Length: 41
Image (tube, rainbow, N blue to C red; front, side):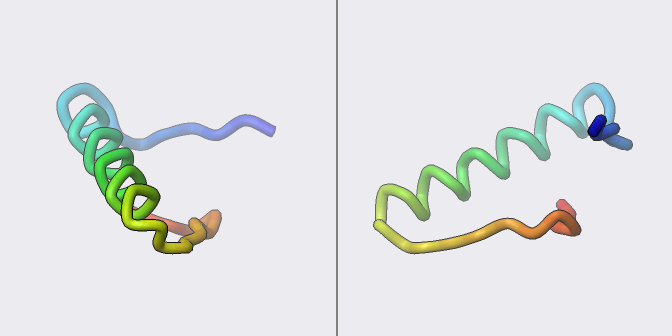
């Protein structure tokens, strides 16, 4: 299965950083979460 991103360049980098920042925050606070296949930024 291949996943293609429609984000490129700066937008891709910003979206990726935002996602990882949120994940790190949730994990540091021990908050359970899940991401669905349709999760959009």
